[in-house]
Amino acid sequence: MSITERIDAITLVEAKQSTLPAPKSVKIELTGQCNFRCGFCALRMREEQPTKPMDWKFFTRVAKEMRDAGVEELGLFFLGESFSSPELLLKAVQHAKVTLGFPYVFLTTNGSLAKPHWTWACMDAGLDSLKFSINWADKQQFHEITGVKTALFDKALENLKAAREIRDAEGYKCGIYASSIAFDGEQASRMEKLLAERVLPYVDEHYFLPLYSMGSFATKREEELGFRPIAGNQGRLGKLREPLPCWSAFTEGHITSQGKLSACCFDASASWEMADLNKVSFMDGWNSEKFVSLREAHLKKDVRGTICASCIAYR
Image (cartoon, rainbow, N blue to C red):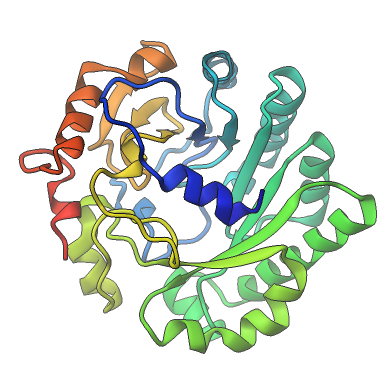
């Protein structure tokens, strides 16, 4: 199954009820830290950046609960850059694949810290999918968007190339992918040269995403970037979904590095916190009273008065 087929399966909401079985996919944030400060990312909205990675005891307990409940796909990231804590990342891949037997373990990275020896180690441990986020057309735009030195532009692309070379040389089954945000109609064409020369030759698949409203930060997104986001998280370009009901509340779990279960894949402020998994089990959190109530509003396609109102209403 291709990565876009997996994405499209997750973004399709077929549920008719608000109390649900375990989601097929969960993203769990090993670390809330990131070396980029991208203008489009909700991570910048955190008033306090987490300084500690996820507690290992917590990770192993919740990961087992999820697998026992039927979760099949485990993303070892959320908003933070997991290669910021490479030892923990490798340990988590090994535990998820070898100890717990997750069928599919995936990771998204900005690429700059995905050094070849860590990429090799993760693939050797069984990582199934490694996706690089490439959201710029050249070094100047890279600096404008990420807020970091341009040297990391080449580093990210070199690490992407190295990942493909490692995968092919060692015969690992890990898919190598890339995605890009199409900020407006011109961005895709602006990126053609970079993609053709330094991305497409090294990935199994590349796809474009719209600029998301990032929850309640839509207005701020437009002010800072000069681009207008879409309402909600509608999936990828080419297979956009209706903003309501939002798939993030139905088909995929999102756990912060501090152990909070969120209803939003862009929750940087704990505004969408549905449960504290330090205190309750994953399934108790997944069907908490708060989560069930929010899903009922989504199913009715009327989120007025909920935390999702400003995101969905942004049109």
